[in-house]
Image (cartoon, rainbow, N blue to C red; front, top):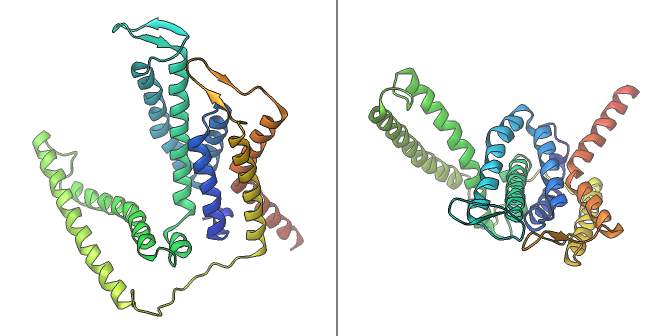
Amino acid sequence: MKDAFSRYHPAVNFLYFGFIFGFSMVFMHPICLLISLICSLIYSIELKGKKAIRFNFVFLLPTMLATSLINPAFNHEGATIITYLHTGNPLTLESIVYGLAASTMLAAVVCWFSCYNEIMTSDKFVYLFGRIIPSMSLILSMSLRFVPKFKSQIKVVSDAQRCIGRDVSNGGVFERMRHGLTILSIMITWALENSIETADSMKSRGYGLPGRSAFSIYRFEKRDKLAIISISLLGSYILIGGIMGGFKWRYFPTMKGKALELFSVSLWIAYIILCIVPIIVNRQEERQWRATQLEI
């Protein structure tokens, strides 16, 4: 992975995503939602390239559209009535805007989680919480690791079954169902065998024995200290500003938010800087690398 932010100490990565997830799910101000969504899309594309673009347009965009359309059909609050549905319920401007806001929040959080999965690997999670909650951290790391591993294995099995004409895309409806059940049976068997192998491996490596130490390659350096201070200051300022009502916004019965002030603008700027911290780190790393190459 070429991402420079991922090479920082796990505590820096975890603190950053902790602030990002909390703010993305709590702040419903339209500007905050747009900042979170745009920055998450930029960072996900920087991390995963074309794969992220395909995921954003194939999965996130339809999800946003579906959520924004479903909300006005069930939520009829709001004072600005546009028209009446065939059921007699009003279609309000506030419900439409709230549906767009909710879909934007959902898309931003999902996109941030995809970035989190790329940066916060299972070994980082175990390193941070292995001594505090050893059993829980191990279970969570194994669960997070199992999902991509299961996905990769099911693709291998499906490709093998397709070669002999027994994939879910072959035959009629009932044949496809039978082929799907066969693949599912193979995957269950694989998962059980894999769990036994994992247990034997853990036992042979001395898991659970008293006094057993754990190897770690992470060292808290000067750059990590500066990053934690910067992220903490930005996150604290945004948190305090949010508590003081700097991001105040309501959708019902009418849309109304805090008036445009220097304080609210400073909060938005701080939020933008916090969201693009990894991008700033990457650009700084690139500049240092180019400067080093020029010196050589």
